[in-house]
Length: 110
Image (cartoon, rainbow, N blue to C red; front, top):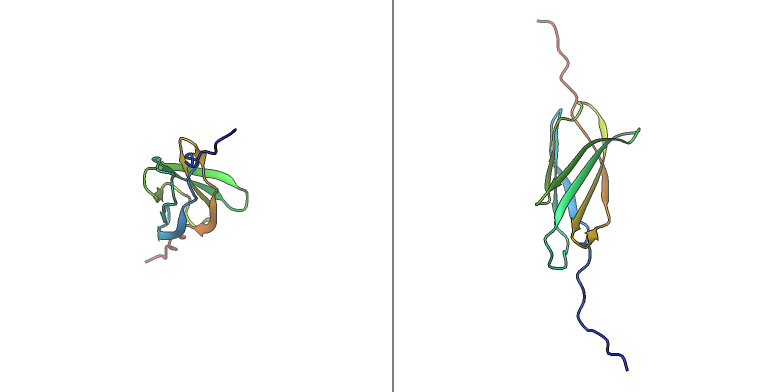
């Protein structure tokens, strides 16, 4: 006879929720999310920033909080962001969205 274990085993975290662009400049952008359920395990948060439309990876960030800041980006670019969480049991599904860096101000002769 087999007994069924009623305890659930920890697994990968749920994806971050409610991610939004909280600050953007000519060379940086910041994304803030709410962390998903982590099965009680410590989780890290990751953001990959790609140049659109050629999908070239520009920045890959890992942080302990779901507040992620990407620096050193090219100005005036359309970007594609992928955000996910991970723990010792794996990674969550990704949250994806579009963003952009601000254009540099045009310089006018004085």
